[in-house]
Length: 229
Ligand SMILES: CCCCC/C=C\C/C=C\CCCCCCCC(=O)SCCNC(=O)CCNC(=O)[C@H](O)C(C)(C)COP(=O)(O)OP(=O)(O)OC[C@H]1O[C@@H](n2cnc3c(N)ncnc32)[C@H](O)[C@@H]1OP(=O)(O)O
Image (tube, rainbow, N blue to C red):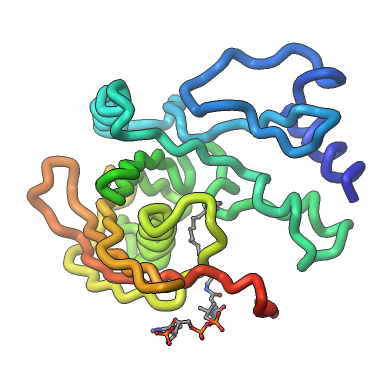
């Protein structure tokens, strides 16, 4: 299994280090992801500007990167292939196919986003530009695509690095979101009660004047004593 994962990562050009050749330049994403003791695996981080990003998205990205300078906010890196590496739920031969679906589109066609997290304030902000493959009604973003981004942004506000699942997600869609436009998704953990984490969220236009959606959600930390299947 390990061998097939490594082969897959090599194909993707993600492996660097002792056997993988030169390491790419350091980014602000923190230390390289070390998955195996003998090899260092660096996965491509997609939460950085690419040519499909609109001026709005770039400007907001720059603003939030400034907020990161004093350490209060952190940019969250985002990968395509990391989630399946330790999964015991799918067969070994299925693993090379598995991808985080929001990172499965070519640049600009699907979910272009970057998230920033403030650990003290328990807030996560996502700057999101929905591409043409996310169309619902003509010219508008599909609500399911919006719901996905609300879910993940809220999940990041609830907890980073812990095994949590969405137990409940309520969304009021207030205005349709035009395709290609940039929206700002603001989420905040407002209550933690045992394994339960409660998050509120809103989605607004870049100038903050249009409210596109409001949501509340409940995330539950997985109980290691219980089986998830
Ligand atoms: C694209 C992904 C990016 C990947 C990045 C990688 C890492 C980042 C790390 C974190 C970011 C997370 C982002 C998450 C977003 C994506 C999340 C998902 O898609 S998860 C998939 C969808 N959800 C599920 O499949 C969940 C299915 N349900 C369950 O597994 C279980 O029901 C459970 C929620 C785990 C709860 O079961 P369990 O037996 O463990 O506990 P209890 O039933 O006893 O419940 C505990 C507690 O919670 C209350 N509860 C449970 N469900 C609900 C509900 N629907 N509404 C209200 N309350 C609920 C329950 O009453 C108990 O409360 P109490 O203790 O007070 O009695």
